Image (tube, rainbow, N blue to C red; front, side, top):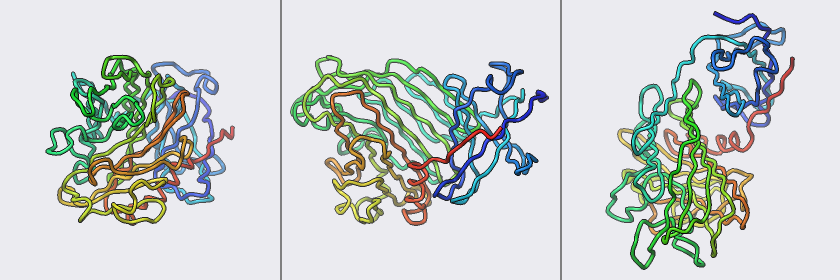
Length: 373
C-alpha cells in the first residue's frame, strides 16, 4: 500500500562523465517534504520520470539511512552532459536487503545476493583487514598465514610503516625487535551496521596504541560496499581521526596484498593513472590510482586503489613495501585531525577493459543533484 503524498522531483546531472550505475548519495529529510512520513515504518521509492512527471520505468531500488538523513540509488546509464529526473515517493513496502552485513564473533560477513563479497576481520588481529574481497572469479587479495610477510593480509589500513622517524609501527605484527614491539589498531565498537537494497555499510570506532599500550589516536572508520554490476564491485573507505600523539613521519597507508595467483610482477598487469605500466615503473610514483590484476580462479580480476582528490598530499605515493605482490597508498598528514578517503574497485579483466580511469572520474566527480519541486 502507498501513502497519498505528492512526489518530490529530483534532477540528477551527469556532469562531464558518463555514468553507468553510479551511486547517488543525496541529503534528504522526508519530514521536510512528506507530512504523512512515519519514522521507522515508511520507506522511500524512486522512479525515473519525464519532464511532465510521467513515470518512465519500474521503480528503482532506493535506500534511506535515517541516522544521517541520506537517500541513495543508482543512475543507470546517463551520458556525460545529460540529466535525468526522479520522483521520490513514500511507501510502506518492506525493503529487500540485497546487501547484508552479519556480525559474527570476530568478523563481519558482507554478502550480496546471498554470496560472500568480503569479510571484515576485526577481533584477535593486530589491525583489522578485509579478506576475502571477491571479484566475480574469486578473491583479489590473499588471506592470513602467507609464507612471506604474514602481516601482509588482505586489504587494510596501516600506520607508521616500519617506524620511520620514530613513529609507532602499526604495520608489522611482531612483539620482538627489530620492528617490534609493534602497535595495534583496536576495535572498540560498531556505531552502525547497515543492510539494504542499494549498499551495505558499517561505521566503527577504533583506537591506535603503541607497543607499550600508549594511545596514539582514535579513529572512526566507515566502509560502504555496492556493485555497479557483477563485474564491477566497489568498496569505499573513509577514516577520520583525532590528531596523532606521535613523533616521526606518521604515515597513513591503505594497503593490499594481492592474490598469489595473479603472479605479480611477472605475469600480472600493473598500471597507474599516469600511463606507467609495470610493477617497477609505478613504484613510489604519485598517481590518482593504481591497478593490479591477473588470473583469479577461472578468469581475470583486478583491484584498483583510488586516492580521493580531497586527500592531503593528493595524488598520493603508490608503492610496494618489501614485496612486489603488495601495493599501498601513502600519505603524511600533519598533527591535525585526519580525514582520508579511498575506493577499492574490484573488476573483471585488466585495466583498459575495466575502464579504470573512467571509474576514477566517476569517483572524483559524483553526479550533482537538486530538488526541482
